[in-house]
Image (cartoon, rainbow over all chains, first blue to last red; front, side, top):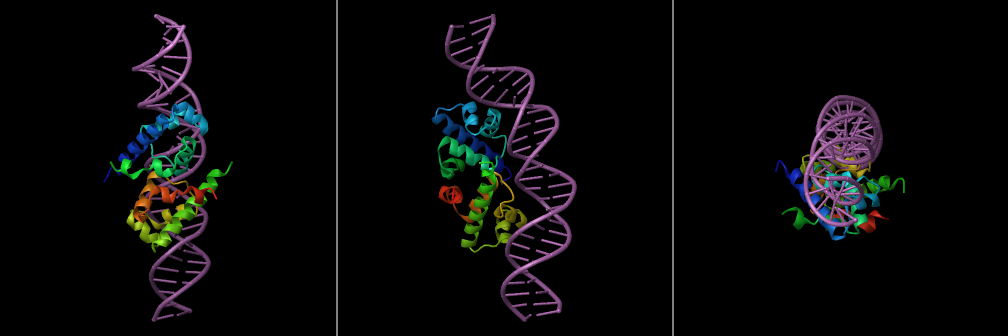
Length: 78
Length: 78
DNA sequence: GGCAAACAAAACAAATATGTTTGGTTTATC
DNA sequence: GATAAACCAAACATATTTGTTTTGTTTGCC
């Protein structure tokens, strides 16, 4: 309850990493697609931040997946 | 291009307002469901902020819709 | 061993979201 | 007219994300 947020960040990060790797992209490559440093991608994937909706939207577009796939409830609710 | 973000915020806000009203909830009522002030809801609905992914996630849960429904591409890309 | 790429992580400044209060508008009810 | 509810919007302090740089680790290749 108190760390629903911490859990959310970790699961969202893992999900994005999972999708990125399934597309055979590196963090620097994904970053380049959305004009971001690879560290910004890394921070999200490692669950260190609660990213903005727009940033996830950009990442989803770059990875060519829907927001529904990124936020797949069954994967996020463990 | 330069204001993709501005566009995103406005469309996301309208979409959330649309869903909230379809559930016959007021901003104060939705806010109460996620322990937020109604002003925070209003700011999002009026496209004044780029909310965090977790906040949208909470709102989607409170409105009982999937993230895919909130970020419906056809509605967001106009 | 030496080198480069990919990644994790920390630190810093700058930009932005969030929490909160306040004022104002509209609508409806009495 | 008075009151209340819903909403928009601005302002402020605080917290957090974001952009950027830096350090270190691991892996693979030469």
